[in-house]
Image (cartoon, rainbow over all chains, first blue to last red; front, side, top):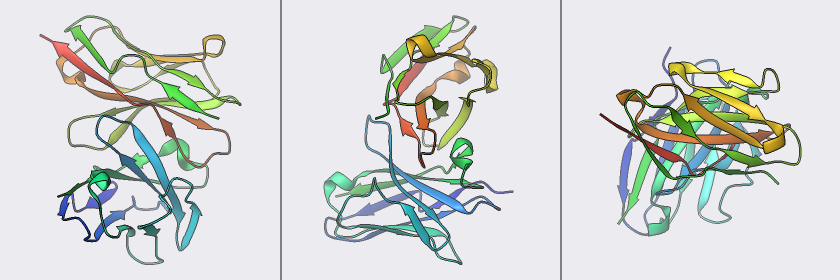
Length: 115
Length: 113
């Protein structure tokens, strides 16, 4: 039973390009969370999704960032027109149910570097 | 509003010595509390969690933490440090009904041979 799979593990983009980060939750998990970790900081919540629904996006920047979790396929975090400040590690976590934020399983993260 | 404070961004201990990593929280309601460990270039792994049962929580790898409501603390301890414990440790809080965890800024533990 594979854990939470994130790809790419490392992504380099130039300013103005788009970044797409993918997350496949654990088998049987239908809830996905995205967190961002800036250098020397803790993880900051971005968005919580269930299949085809955004439940809580209170941590998402208002512009350039979007997330989806389609009926089929992985969850995708999309960053348009990246800037240097977007350089960070982006972690995805999944849980089996609505009360499952107590049992989050994290992926290994995607590290974005913006040149 | 919830927040988490981890005192000491870096802690060094000798191998075999006591590990004590501090975490204080503020929350308007009794929260759920967590400790996660992150090894280099890896994701976070749950060490232990407090969910309003026993106040002394035992986790993996010999770690434990005690919930002290009067002190709003949830410090992480291990009696004897091992070299493999070197990592970054994060305390996190989740308020009842909240969708997400709120993390502290982390404490990097170094174990000296």
